[in-house]
Image 1 (cartoon, one colour):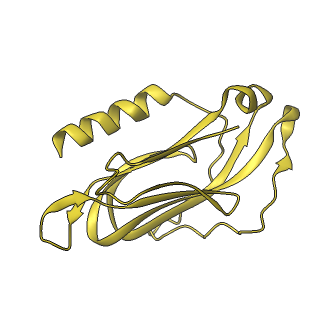
Image 2 (cartoon, one colour):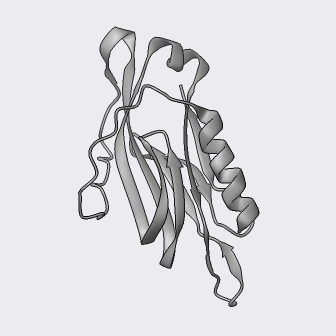
Image 3 (cartoon, helix red, strand yellow):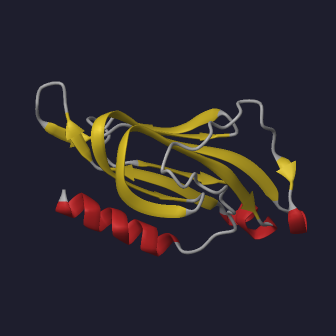
Length: 145
């Protein structure tokens, strides 16, 4: 778990700041609202585009979750967990891409062993990245263009 946490922290630090303006998270720490499946991309300021992004971590119990792209954060979360927000890409980010990621910690698997919690990233209602936590235990990341 220490290696996963260290790698995840490094990933967040290396991704830098982007043009995303996250929706405020409820003060009580509850899950954010789900993204609408019919949310179209709309022009943003300075020739950019907006995308509705939803990050999800499955499982039961609690685990550490690190995310980046619609704001950024790291903390212990009750599962299942989700966070939704709007990513506003500049014209330059549309060319080079804008990284969104979620890296979940470990949970108890069905066989009693520790495994990474599964995750999903949706952009504009479409599933664009997925990890089951067993065969692909690297978290989820996606570059929006």
